[in-house]
Image (cartoon, rainbow, N blue to C red; front, side, top):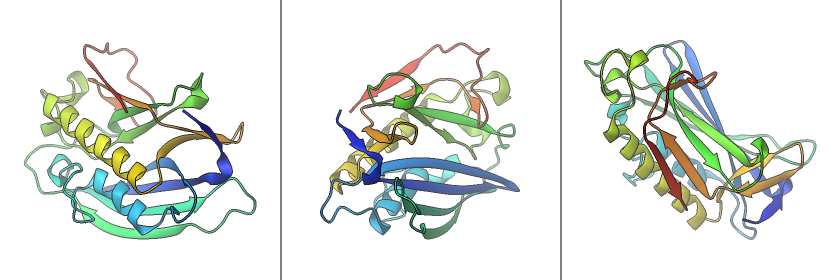
Length: 216
């Protein structure tokens, strides 16, 4: 995959909340030049992955996978790579999960989507933490000793693939950016393991018994 200067890259911050806890995911997209400047359409595509239907396309995660205390607050886009940074443009959503009889997962429990670019080392990889899920997303309760349900993994695989394809279509493919070497690489593969992690670290003591690898 081509390596592009980080000056052609925008940072996308997805701000969520879970009761009193903040959940933040940072993604990066590359502009293919011309009119392909990331803006509201790009923000809607990303928001649609976390909560389907935000731009009239029902191709993301259903609100029913989230606990009712989860909320998608905003998506912001900011050009990076040059100083001073431009101000971020913020798109507000304020969408909440649906009411459920299922209990919330333990604090900071999340499903990890690992991003790969073909680049060597950690600078060529990234990850996204999906939090705000409930125990209905787990094979059995308690979730601390169980695994993500197969239907959740399939939903994430489908929704994430759709988001990546739509971002590429609008000229803003997802990349992993490294501010250390000032470059970004396009994501060529993502991986889902059938185990829970936390927003701070992976659950290293739990073995992976199934892995989904999606090549793009």
